[in-house]
Image 1 (cartoon, rainbow, N blue to C red):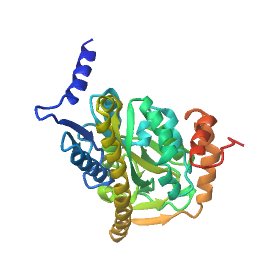
Image 2: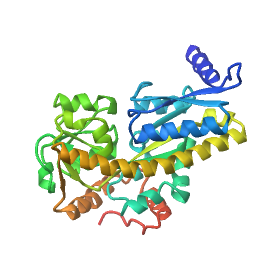
Image 3: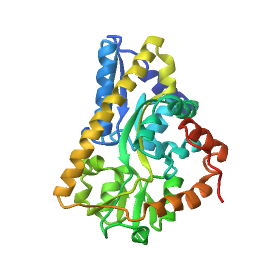
Length: 334
């Protein structure tokens, strides 16, 4: 009873306007202000405040200041926090069907990745998250999950053997690295730099810009390989409990703000990715491409997809998602 009363009080508090009749909401941002997440969060807040004449104000808290991603997503699900940003991988524990987005090589190219964040594919994902109390307002493009490490260059699948990689607490990403011959260790994002610096793990997987922002080259990361197996989507989401209490007009402002921030974020990401890669090369990080990506792709389809089929809801769920992308159905394991 005490917990229920405290949770109810927290929910009512974030929805109670001040004397100036303004809603003051918090947004939990996992990355620093200078990042893809930070940029989208800032653009979102600016749009909302401008188009509501400051009736709705959004204060961004960066670098996991309000807790790690899973904790923040859980809080918006409960309604004790209005907004949070987090990766699709960290939403999978709330809804396993979302794991289809983290299946290796589910996307053929970058155009398909962009298309997956709009229209029918976006609606497919958002229906699942809304049912769990989390409404997606914007997608944040954070690049492919390029593996980096401190031990050796990765040029083929054999180079992965024995390397220890930090991964999110996501069963599919764990299985991916196991299938590729590495040893995955689930570690929260907030603890990743320290884990790399103290050599608890040898590597991690993230795109160029966030790698640069997090200064992973100062945490023993010497080698990066462009492996296109998975794309890192971040989301800006609102608590469905909070959203449902707003007026229709206010709801539409949040929806429009998300679309605006997403498009601005894409332009920002593409520019910063290019600059980050150039910076890393100039500062001694070795960047390689694979000699045998077809092997990685085949392992993904032959090992990871069949082993994760039931986890994500079966072949029906996988093919339902593929259909929204305009792709042929997956026939399952041979």
